[in-house]
Length: 213
Image 1 (spheres, helix red, strand yellow):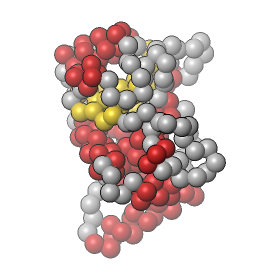
Image 2 (cartoon, one colour):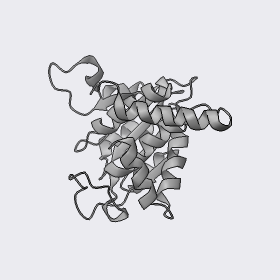
Image 3 (cartoon, rainbow, N blue to C red):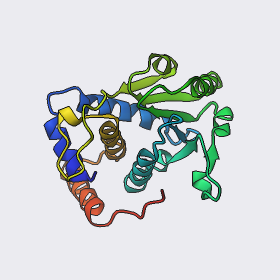
Image 4 (cartoon, rainbow, N blue to C red):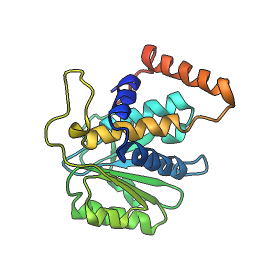
């Protein structure tokens, strides 16, 4: 989903809580990964790997000049021969502690094993954020959480902008990652800020950085 489709989606969702809530959650993410922080860990469930969000956050980190948004993807299963940035297993969560941020993304139940690791990371001082389908146990561990509704139908694949009826966890992830990048920009005054935003949008549409994922 490119910047134009995100903008159109926000127009569709105007008047609902989703635009405001995604911006609020993105603000929590930015605050947690502030420059003095220890890095962002991104993990899904055994059945759901948030590699798409990892790629979007990595792009937003490059576009916004906020490298702290670039995540380390933590995987339940690491295939042989995976490149270094895709070869981080669950053992990384055992070392998570103060100054680090753990973002858990799971449309279904995260599983007892993951919840135990998240609990240990929080007890060791990590900030825990959850972007999920509303699991109560996960929300109880999270410092901030955003729950997406289950999708009644698959998200559009024909280029059509999703509507509020199409909203699911994948679509909410787009809203959050876009808000995290754009709201991390410095706040210059007046027309300069407007020109900078237009220039950034043009860069996104015409020359996106090569994907790492």
